[in-house]
Length: 452
Image (cartoon, rainbow, N blue to C red; front, side, top):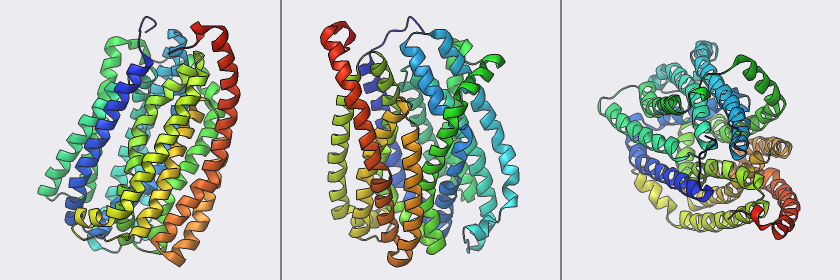
């Protein structure tokens, strides 16, 4: 690994290409699968599926915030060509990942303790029978997805971003084909949910074979080393759990508020409109993991000024493209959704434009948050996530009673802009402006420290 040579720019472009291609395929398959699935399941069962996935995102905090920290430490070690330290963090991360995956079946045993039918207000008789099996399947698969993400993090930290994303692409296509097979043979909703995610999980696990052949030491952990690494990451991990809880509240609250104040059919209406409106966020989300280690390596190599310039240009481009998308969404969005769902969902322009405002703010926030993670700036993220979650829950319940789905979209936009975007922009500016000035002086004195 120490002898491994690479171009940051080349790896970023390659990883971004495969990430975007994977997302394009995912969007294309969703364009076909959503109307077929909606027609097969019906509005309430489809809403049940979306709501269950949304509510169980709380499982993602089971990694105790260790994934981002281990990924950051691995990227730092790789930038400094410290093979021993890289192996310490990678082997610890993979061990934690296996433990998380094994916790899935154990957590599923406790699913019977909750009245899911009453909690999610399920009224359809078929949906009531499928609710508990669906919850169990999604619990097990979500634990497996979280655990296997440690494997992808090893490749990202080594700037080998293409392999995990190619696997995600293949897994997405395989899941889509299995979905079509399931609909054709009229399988139950829980089996349908498993068909979509299991291929991706298995392909992620196949990356272990690549590591076993090339860097066997990354897989086999040393218990003493693991204990030391976990102690080292305990404090930032606790803060990261708080950040993740805030993120989970922001992502799960809208659907939960909709089902409690409106109905499961409205969850379907909201989630389909949200899926179309947040296409730019989906594209950003698949690209930012590529830039995370790149930011770290540039910063550590004396390229602070370049990081600041990259971040500014990327945020400006994000605002511009998302604004254009929002305008197009307001004009053509209702027609696209009616065509897409064969008339089952009929949104109005105001609702879609409000979602578009949320997308613009969230798009910029994605980039700022990625930069903060790479800089280990956790406190500001914790404060902003908690503030945004509180604003969303309070305003969401109030506005949904007054304005329905429009109120939810208004609450989402307000929570992100007031609770997170403003403070994060200020904090990013203070970091980049201060560091960039010193980096610029360093570059003027020693051109060898500036990297192209």
